[in-house]
Image (cartoon, rainbow, N blue to C red):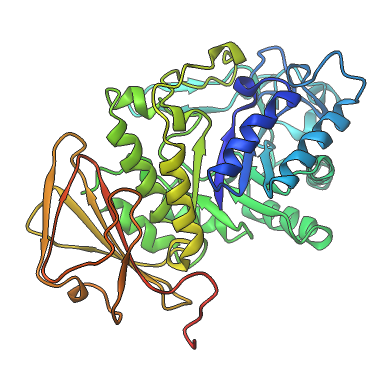
Length: 430
């Protein structure tokens, strides 16, 4: 999955989404992920849903004669014409604290001292963030589990009826695995093409494996925070890769903008997108990354007026990387992965091999986004267990011939992509 996150508060009303869909398709993305567009509660947060069966007025064209559902359908038609599939959030771990559901079905919620429990999380600095605009569903101990499951299934049916074909399940690990298993199996019985993604950030590998075992097609990994050195990411990768593929991202709607975070270093944007796209089975990128946006996306405060002037244009670079990902099976799965040693410790070398096909790859990444680094290798085939030729499909300064010995000066943050000459569709028997 090559996913473009169209953040609805920045994109504005549905009729305004078309140029963003067209740009995503041109950059060779194949999925569009839209954060919740259902009616929010008083806080206005996208993730504080008050009515699961209504479209939030902020995303509708008020002068249109088309109904809210028809306006969504029109957008789906545009996406389909561009060969894009659409996914959205399934937010059923909590709802808006002012949702009518709390009065209609109090048995579905957690209460303490007569008040609904607000979800919270522990921050890195030890403080606790509490979302007081949210009320926590009680999937584990509700006295009416069948009623709550039926309601959640109706929400799924509504979203699929709007035209969405994928569901990113928000904070999936907070819900019991048996609940997810029943919901996913029931959905796929009538909609086998639907893709379920588990948002598992913040939980350990074992909890991730437990959640993924419910039938999810993808999970999300934490490669965004990897320093290219510590062992934890590759260890986590090995613990989950045989169970379910994962999705990397260089930034998300929950993080600071990487361009601002990196001190406005374009090399970091390129380096991190290339790594995210080729590290794991899937990749996701939020709207504006391609233009070096600096203002963090906010689930309440962001508005279309926050659209920033483009300070860079990475569309060609991202398109090239996405096409490489689409063209070589080794980049479409949780493949065999090994970090290789090299005398220059400022370089990251990763060897990848497809589990299903003969496709292999060697990634050479300059970890230093500020300085040039030299790479030397007596024989590239010492690291790649495949017959010649190796192809250089790098987005910048690709070489027609890879000599032996091989020397190359990598610009700050630059990545080299070397692949065996097996592309999409070839199997190990061919």
